[in-house]
Length: 399
Image (cartoon, rainbow, N blue to C red; front, side, top):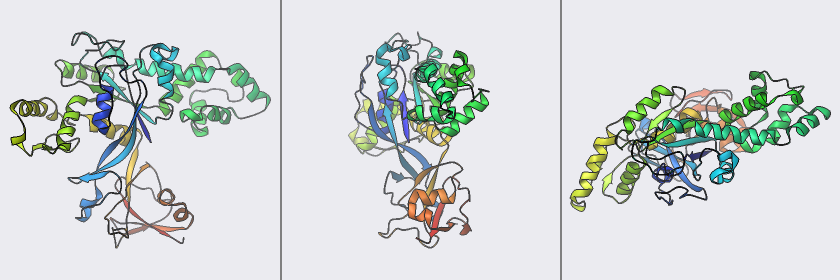
């Protein structure tokens, strides 16, 4: 799974990325501070299953603190995109290509209105962030359209002449964008396109198809960054009302990064996504630092979702992509051979079955599947049993 961090230059994308991953990223107050994409690891936060059994888990990957399990996901921060990116403006084609493998996009916008359409710093509140809400989807739609229509007439004629399914042919051509045959069948049906005569599809048909495929393969969450600045909260509320079709989350990458670095230094105890923190060593902080922490608490942590950075990642993975966390475990023993409690946890797509989970653990477990056991209820279930978020499952296999 890959989460893409996208948006205009200078809106705080790299700060958001670093706050989410604590990776080293160039953070600068000028357009195109990021040229090559930054890669890192972020974390999805869930209630850990260990507290259901009154035990402390020992994660093999990620970490657990305060009863919350943090599961790793890959992040990529691409350079800023500007209007006209699909035409090559601002090195747009290169940056769009960096997004090919992303499963979901986090669109970071400057909700304080201090960055214009080119990514240049302007007076606070002088730019309307509403203008940024839809521009990225337009750029992505046109990017998809360009890929789809390149050599279309020849492609369509060849498909018809060779009697190849248009769904199979397009799925193969667009596989790099995450398009598969099932999605193509769904698109052709819902858009009422004639699969037998793709050579008759007109420009509007291809545009509608590009939009459908883009929205299906690159869903988006709006991260309204810089919400700590004056006027930003009012803009955020207005955007939520003005664009009810989008998911907006207020956030402050600067404040989240400050809290995580203070936590890493052992100055405070802070769990990402929390609405508060504890100062551990006040004697090591000067008055300015204490005042800054107090400002963070009053300005953003008092709002639902805290700084919002953790909430953005959680919503993108759990709500938009609809993943769930499943733990391998045993009815009589939660420990592995080394004594580690619930060391593993896997993110699975919703509607995954017990058999799907067996194969996720190991091919041999799937091939030799006999049954599965729900560790919470101690109930034996079959291969078609639909799993639920935070299930702890034991696989019984003949191999």
